[in-house]
Length: 333
Image (cartoon, rainbow, N blue to C red; front, side, top):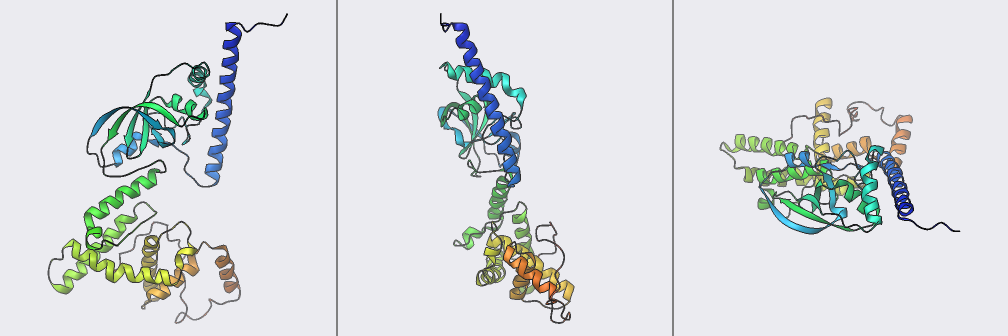
């Protein structure tokens, strides 16, 4: 006679399915981490304590129970090393609780809401990491959650990583310090590397000092910012646009190139002991550091043919460093 589906056999079948689900999720997590590493992308959950430490804190308040989009949960309070950014498990030791929760889903058992912190448009799991992992693997798009919102002026979303967060905080500090959007409402300075806004502030403060020496008075920061933007920043940005430099450096911004070229200009003037124009510095920087394969091949043939073997009076010899090595020469006036 055929074997009947007894409660014990059903439970075993559900358990086996849940264990198979976990094994599949673990494999997916491994390959996702591998390809993220291979492509140089950040696959980690954000640690809530680190994010909270970095952010300017203005308080918090309870929002009650909400339906939270799962794709907007990007971090965890204490389990950020156990799951990846897609909340796929990273360790086999997570199987026991993960399987129990998956079994509950398979048996249509209603689970309690998770608990999260909300910062901007992003969420961080306080309690319920395994429930989020199983829900995402099951194809859910939302989950019930008790929400506590952190009040902060810095906006973050589902695409934010730690470097993004640091840049946004630095950008906010840059604006508070310089008042650029007030004195030049059309200005938009976007930097892709952490620490770069601090360098821009140094440039503006140096320009402010030179203005004080020239006019023999204290210069308000707003006046110095406007002058630096008009007389230092925009002229080099115009050169960058005229030479179409940005296309040679994918993923970078005009402000990134401003910083790199202005520092490259300083090194060239020091090395050659003579003046170098913004146009020459920008062109030489592009020839030296461009990430374009075609330009690399072109430069290689030029070097082989001796095109850069002219006398020092006419040739500019590149300093053998990359622009992102972290060197910090004195900012330019």
